[in-house]
Length: 91
Image (cartoon, rainbow, N blue to C red; front, side):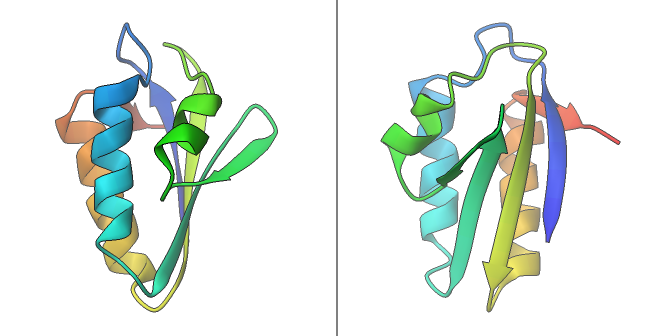
């Protein structure tokens, strides 16, 4: 499953929100979670991977979940993106 977001936070995705995404992804041990942006795909279970995307305001980010609880994991990750004011769902 996947969902695409447009980054709206003026600071982009930096250490604090990246940590929130990684912590959420790690709650779902039987699900693989990835972030894809600018042609690069990284695991969402690594803070360095997420930060290496260098996401800035206006960029597009796709969150991808695969495995056992992919639906619940994607829902939880969407909540982090929206509730933290990081991004809005991009159609």
